[in-house]
Length: 264
Ligand code: URA
Image (tube, rainbow, N blue to C red; front, side, top):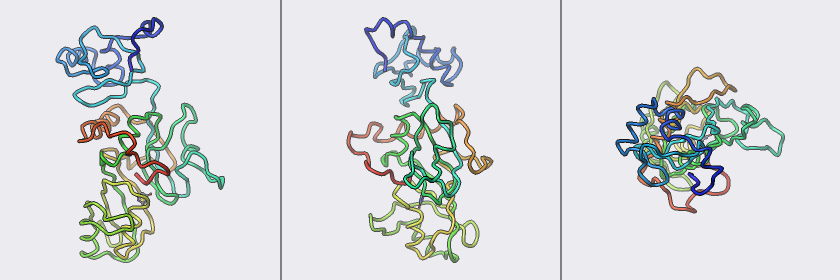
């Protein structure tokens, strides 16, 4: 947030268009135009040309979408291998996803993949984006490839699509296709614990291998298992767009799932 009243902070403030341009919103000139046209807000107020903000400002919104401009924020895309846990520290001494990315600045995984699930996982120190990506009301789609036992027929695929009764309730409609005998592609918008495994099991086809292949618009079929890379600015903006205009853009406090994170 901007910090009125502090001389030290005043000294560190930079022109808004400069901060926006550095964050990849566009050229300085383009950012000036955005400001002139009233498309930029800072801490809930429409910005005007000449406004200055701290480089770490968190309340900047462009076209209604909160954007991360803080240069200390990092966003990594990891291809998690099987056998690596998605927690900060494992009581059994197993490798964790944090062992696979730089230790500084400290990041956290966005949601969770099961021990044996492979594929794309985001890690970041961006708390606002994490909250939005994991909050059920934003419903960011995630795509999985599931190698299952047996060969699911039309009935099983239809049940997966329409919703399956699990012990924590019926699953929301999903996009499900049989890509080859025994291999399903599922796109779900929820992030319940072990959801894909439980869905497939419920229709009689337990999962043998599960790989997450997409988070929102984010995919990378060329990232080797165990490797990570930073998101590029276009990818970050696309993620922010995906969660920026959700119906509940500011979810009520205290509605987070709490406790152990579900898969998401
Ligand atoms: N669904 C699962 O069953 N497991 C995961 O790791 C992610 C989604």
